[in-house]
Length: 322
Image 1 (spheres, helix red, strand yellow):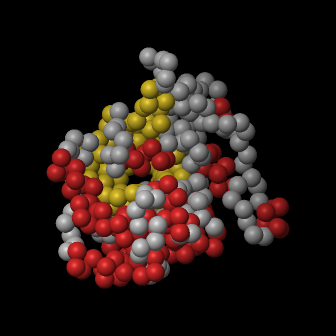
Image 2 (tube, rainbow, N blue to C red; image 1 turned 120 degrees about the vertical axis):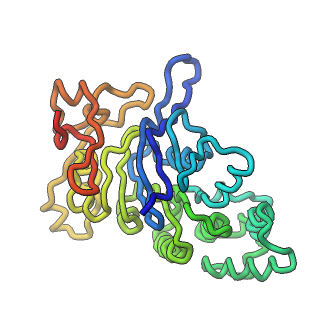
């Protein structure tokens, strides 16, 4: 199957105030493909570059270098009408529903904005259509003319999701869409997103630091550390057999609802904080925190992302040949 989206050596650097030469390397040479209809999970610690990657892929931020192909078209070069067409097919759901909705617009006005922009609805049909759409995300007519401050956090996120899908896009970036919600509401939103994906045959890029949520939602998972992917593979395989030490440490920290199993399992602990993306260490960027650090190799040369098993890629000298 041809990929719906493909990136090649994508980079996004931000200038550092007061310095002509230093850059924040938020995304630093990321390449991957998304298959039509799949959910591609991206996990990592805060500051790893996950959200920046999502914004660059959608051209909300201009890349420093690299390519992004959407249905074989290089969207890093599109402008005007081509960019508008791309926006119709590629949408984003942001992390915080409290700030992603305009407080001055009613829910009806919020949902009408993309429809008016693409001239997809006659005014006499609008109310009936919007009520039908609201019911699809678990809301109703009573919410149509309310303002965002009159809704709960879960209701706001349902509106934000509906605004993103109302044009039936082919690709949606979900940037931690449930992290600001109560646990009871999270499950409802995640199930709703899965139903929407089936209905639209949409492709998701699901960004989160919650590993259990990513496992539930994703077909494939990419683990991101300091601007790079360090491991990519099928969801089940990565959870059953994580290869990179960083992935192993992340997964071993997942709580298990069984005290005996928790005491019995071996945890791989890592110390310290991630290095600054301004001053990335030489060699493997994880080596200052890695329990398997090999001096003279890990701190000298950066390992490449290589396929160690079918569909399972890892960037680590423990699994790469010099």
